[in-house]
Length: 164
Image 1: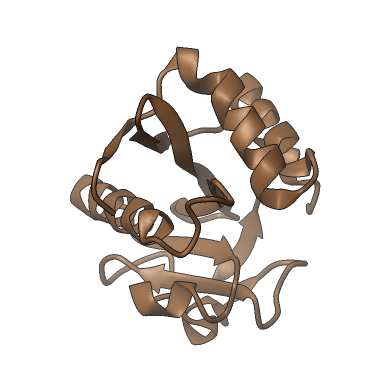
Image 2: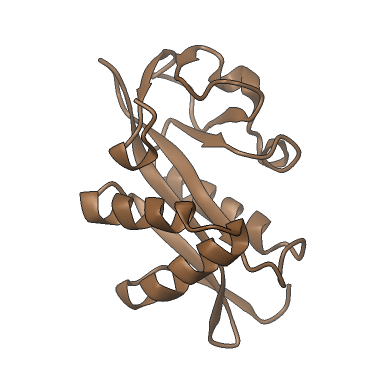
């Protein structure tokens, strides 16, 4: 989409990110999760998409523990302004985030998301199948960023998700 700038989120973006998540998901749960992740220091990196000085997209990556092993990364929430959805903003946010994580040496990234959206970036249920988690199912996927550990184990989510 023309006219969209992508950048790392900054402190002053917080109110706009909370508003965007609430509007994109139609309820405040994801905005609350973002706030709790930030307050707990459980954010690796966040990116925003900005158009005409307005935030129209947001993606967050958080540390994901693997009991007794090296850590992994979780993706989410990711949101796009309802008026901008299906324009490529979300896809570009995912690409930018995954490239940044790959460059930093992240081994594997997990997502609980739409089964028709995330596979185009390499995510699959099969890549997540050796990991134990209460959210396992057809929407829980992973993409391997590099070969090597962790190859299996119990996932430990930040408290903001309330799944452990």
